[in-house]
Amino acid sequence: MYRRFLRVLGLVGLAFLPAVAQLAPGIPRSEALVVNVLTGLVGTPGNFNEWVGWKWRDRGMQQLMNEPLWSIDFASGQIINGLAATPPEYNADFTRMVVHLRPGCYWSDGVPITAEDVVYTVKLISSTPGMNYQAVMAANVSNVYATDEHTVVFELKAPNSRFHTYFLDRWGCLWIMPKHVFEKVTDPLTFEFNPPVSSGPYTLHSYDPAGYWTVWVKRDDWHRTPTGMLFGEPKPKYVVFRAYADPAAKVLAMLRHELDAADLTAETLKAVLAQGKTVRAYQPTYPWVVNNDPCITGLTFNTVIPPYNNPEVRWALVLAIDIVKYAAIAVDGMAPVSPLHIPYLPGYVKYFFAPIEKWLEDFTLDLGNGEKFKPYDPTIPFKLAEYAQSRGYVVPTDPESIKAAFGPGWWKYAPDAAEKLLKKNGFYRDEQGKWHLPDGKLWRIRILCRVDLAHMSTRNALAAAECWKDFGIEAEAVPSVDFSSLGLTGDFEVTTDWPAFEPWGAGPDLFRTLSPFSSENTAPLGQMTPGHQSRWSDPRLDRVIEQLKATDPTDEAKTAALGAEGLKILVESMPSVPTLNYIGFLAWDAYYWTNWPGIENAYTQPYVHWGPFKYMLPFLQPTGK
Image 1 (cartoon, rainbow, N blue to C red):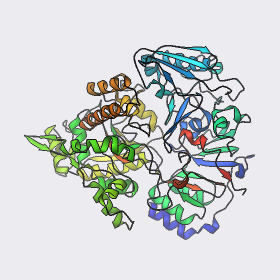
Image 2 (image 1 turned 90 degrees about the vertical axis):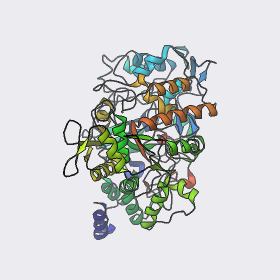
Image 3 (image 1 turned 135 degrees about the vertical axis):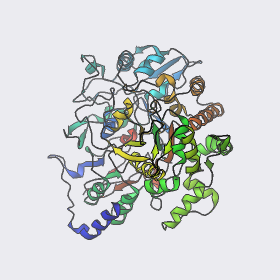
């Protein structure tokens, strides 16, 4: 598909592409920043109630509309105080947390943002099953109240040194509601919050009822928002979020200067860099990609339905993956692999990968009939380097640099061992080599993924389907606009949503990665899960999570040790499969806007879909075109 796309570009020629973008009437292109929606076509375009289910928050809701209490910028590893003026204050045993709000912040309709908004938000969510964060708020908060206009006190039911992280934006968080709006609503679960009231520097301008675009306009009182107070006036008057059918459509739009920033695929990133004179990537040379993203991608099993409720079946599917072929299909080999449920990043080498490596090498599976098997393969990065060299890329030659570029190792491609595990559990092959379930039915795996071909979700699904088909399973990638909703309700077999929630991106604290697997965060099939979509839990991991709650996150040694213990439990049970670091095939067009945060000028995280995108906008510079 992509080779055909490149040929078409060469035949058409860019001279025939119009240079002026077509925007809605009244929106000058020179005043508009146009970016793509990472998660694609919006399924609920008229619903902005972020507190119930999934509402495509990356179409501007988390980036421009909602200011969190705190957010983290992974480029610097710093926590930014947003609506909160200071970090949270805990008592000695972590049973009480005080939040001091930033004075002078206003909702977009002119009403002050106060402590009563925070209190109302937490009480409403705690008492309303079906709202996001309801379970964790009800489980943690015994009382919440305001002592003055800008001070909120949380009394907790048990020690929890990380309670504040529910309000810390990484990819979403518990945002604060406007009390004066929601207190007039009969049913907050069906309320669409349209038009929304904004706490951020932009407010809703318009949207496409079909879900293709959403336009935001800068508030006249932008200076009464945390973004304005901290970083100054955002430069674009308008920000347009658009969904595109495929990566090729993004490239064409970018070459026409109709799209300023987009996530692409390996193939289309190279195409747009080759054709666009004003286009750049995060890194100016190979591998071009954003390489410091604290997310891990891969596969997630629905562990409450057979056969994926069996850890030996899950492990068999892991051993049926040729990770070199997998990485080649997914990202042309440009991403590091990770055998752990965290990305392979320099900071995590010290805390986790190096200390756990010997354990990985000794880890053993029972194949049955007394046969043991060690699945870890530390030679994988060198095999990936060989693949990159075969593609003509210049790669490092010394072992440590190769590991830094391609990861520490992964699991062996061992179809024979996978077959033994499956036969041990009643599976069998037919005469054509096709696998059948123990009940005799042909084994078919539908891998739920996003509709956007550029997303790592879809890339993982395509790669997994190819590997499992080679092994004899009828596997296929199934894109869906309802990807997130289906995952949250458990309507899938295997999904390519995150195999584990991303850690904070700085320091050894893995509470955010491990806590979604807590048994208190599981839910029956058909109900929205507040935890990880695998719906897997383990009493051993529950104990680790409880110990983390009672541990000061600044105690790095104890925090890292507990994190490592949790990672080992995840490897043993493999409820999800970490495969590749999330890498960003990100391209920016500098035709209308310059001063993008590339690797040489990383003043903030580089993506347009993360919450801190709002903090980029004061630093962009218009070209005057």
